[in-house]
Amino acid sequence: MMKKIIAVACGGYSQEYEISLQSGQMIFDHIDHNIFTPYKVHILKNEWFVLDKNENKHPIDRADFSVKINGKKIHFDAVYNSIHGSPGEDGVFQAYLELLNIPQTASEHYPAALTFNKRDCINVLKTHGINSAPNYVLNQGDQIDEDEIVKKVGLPCFVKANRAGSSFGITKVSKKKQLKKAIAHSYEFDPEIIIESALAGTEVSVSVINSNDKLRVLPITQIISENEFFDYDAKYHGKSKEITPAPISEEATRKLEKTAEKIVRVLKLKGLSRAEFIFQDGEPYFIETNTVPGTSPASIVPQQIRAAGLTFKEVVTGIIEHAIEMNQTK
Image (cartoon, rainbow, N blue to C red; front, side, top):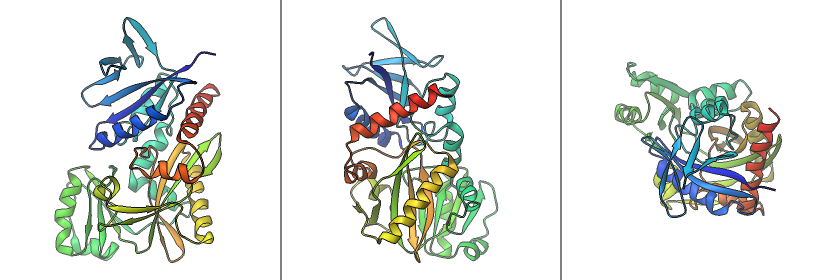
């Protein structure tokens, strides 16, 4: 049986590309070389290329997502999508691969685009009874009415870029006079922003693997940030305590698992996804979901996989095989 040729795609067009490169390296290091022949593929704003064993660059032919190495043209059987931000998490890369009929491991283009837009995702989930914080939406150029914002969401609140990850473009605001500066900061990352009430409760992260519509919820992680919230510094520079499995009651665990499963089914997410919640007054409140969650050594997902008694290799293998199988049954 011939090995499947897998492109481990990482990078991206946003500030998250460095984290994505680490996630991609982790996938590449743990992929089963007995079953797959992997290639590191960097998808960057100015160039797409494959890195060979000697770290030499070989440009991707975007007409068919192939590469020529030492005179031999290589076509990929599937893509492991570990691109954070655009174009791998907002559906653009997925749509491109769908046109070429190349399977990829993350959610399809529409669910990816929907989840990447915090405002639209929250609105869809609300209609299915998923709790979320009160919010206020602004588009660049809109008049800023600080009194109206505070009346709607209260203080403290979070001002967020609507389409950004890894906590880029987020500010926690405690005083009304801080709003305009925080809004200006968010606009540096996206022309749409969302302002949300700051919920008081236990912050948790819940990952779900969807394989053939069989959902597996991984052990839940509680996040305790040393900073004001779980920002970039807390996520990637060790400024947080992450406890897996979370020290929460069995009832709270069941509620979170049930809610996370419902989100995956409602949004039609595939492969590995991770949702963030604040557990307040006995109920989970949805913050956001990631369809390409980080898999770097500093990320939460590898911790959850270990806590589940699984190996990273078997999870990666299952996700790739599921993506290929789904594509064959289309």
